[in-house]
Amino acid sequence: MAEAIITLIIIAMFYSHTGYSNVDQWGGIMKKTLIEEFGNELFVKHFGDWMKVFARVYSHHNGQLCSHLLGKIVCPTLILHGTEDGLVYPKHGRLLHENIKGSRLILTIISLMTILK
Image (cartoon, rainbow, N blue to C red; front, side, top):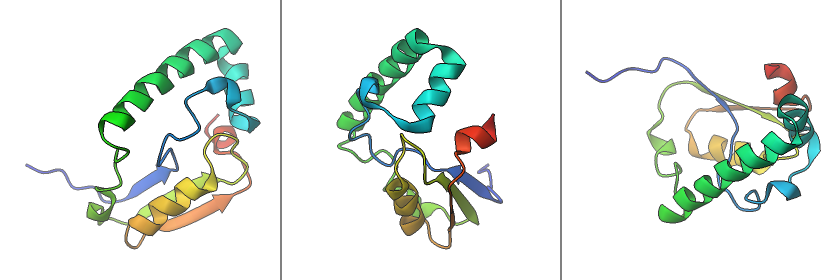
C-alpha cells in the first residue's frame, strides 16, 4: 500500500554538492553554529566524512540525486530557506521551488539553524 503525503515541508538543502566537499572552506552562521554545537574537531571529522560520502554518491548518480523526482511531488509543499545561510545558497531553494509544481518558497534572513535550535 502506497503512503500518501498530505503536506511536505522542505528546509532547503543541497541541490548539488558543488563547492561543499571541503569543510574548511565552509563559512557563515551555519559553520559557526555547527562548531559551537559539536566542537571544531568533531565538526571537521563528522561533516568532512559525510561530505566525502555525499560526493561519491553524487558522482555515482551523475549529479542527479533527486532532481528527476521533484516533478513527481504533487502535495502542497513549503520550502523554507535562510538567505544568510553560509553553507546552502539561496539558489538551492529556488531550484527546488522551480521544480516542484505549486510549491511555495519562503526566503528568510533568519538562519534556519537558529530556528531549529
